[in-house]
Image 1 (cartoon, rainbow, N blue to C red):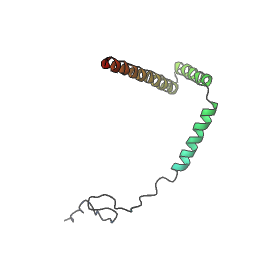
Image 2 (image 1 turned 180 degrees about the vertical axis):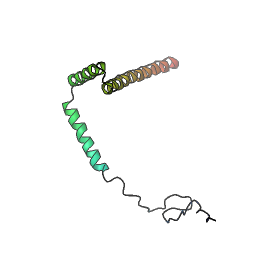
Image 3 (image 1 turned 135 degrees about the horizontal axis):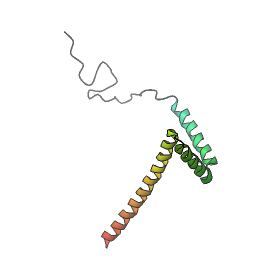
Image 4 (image 1 turned 90 degrees about the vertical axis):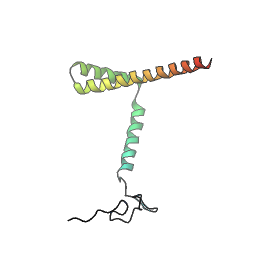
Length: 109
């Protein structure tokens, strides 16, 4: 019928030890050749956004998203709600931290 499969370890390759781990000196794969370029482009976008972003522009953008959501634009509604929910989530996290600190102080007494 068919031959027995290789035991875990060799599997027809010399780059692994008997436990299936890579042997010392194994150089691995080439990685993603585009990752450095993608990281550089992402950093440039972050820097550019930081230079032009102001509180007034952010407020205007959120108002615009809100108005578009009211008109039925589901993409705008989703984005608006994601930002609104994130803010509530952050406020709740801050409140939890404050309550935990107060509890720790009251238990220390």
